[in-house]
Amino acid sequence: MNPTTRFILNYGLPECKNCVYFIPDESEKYKYPLGRCKLYGVKNLVSGIIRHEYADHCRQSKNQCSITALHYEAINEQDNTNLDSTKKLNDEDSNK
Image (cartoon, rainbow, N blue to C red; front, side):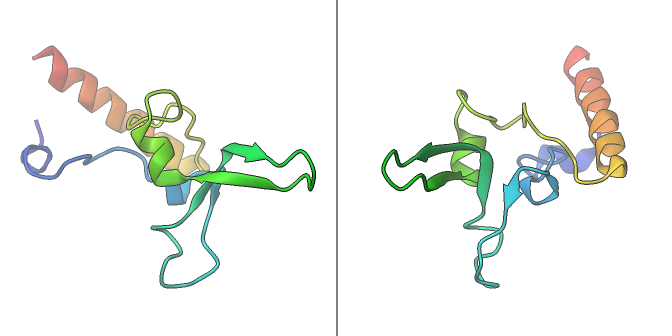
């Protein structure tokens, strides 16, 4: 087991900012903390405007993407390769 995983929560999990569904906030200061997810939201039936959920909320909800990033799709193929490697390592650690 990697010693870093013992101290840093969520180490090795994919980051929303690298997902194709992530919408960064318009302000530079809150670009990532207030980012939203294209997969989840509510459409206003009158205006047609979709208000997307905050990505952080989606990652905390077991009914949405959850902490394990169930619907994560990397922006580039390299991130998907890293995700597969991380999942294999986590599976190996849990079997010990």
